[in-house]
Length: 127
Image (tube, rainbow, N blue to C red):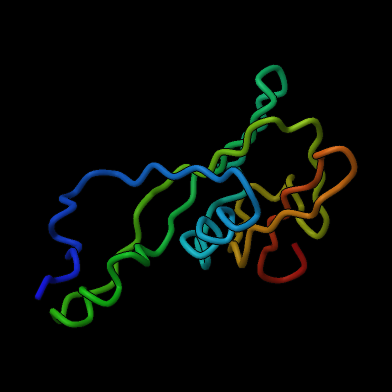
């Protein structure tokens, strides 16, 4: 009988995941669920058409192992990058409040016309 791979076999290497469709984005959304970040850690690089968020996420891929071994669930800093961004808007977020902490609830894709669409980050509260 074969065993499932264990988390420890992966070592302490960073995860590097990409999403090519809405199903892939569901996986990334689950990994950044409940991540927190200061409003100051959002960058839109207009010339590169890229948005980056430096988040502190729960290490969901290790939660079961951590609990089974009696160690605390940890948070890790992660970079969430969205490429091919033509515009950016927010609602319910006061970007001038430099002390505001945001919490990510989900990341979804809303399709538009001609393979375009919107990546929507839903935040706790009204963000």
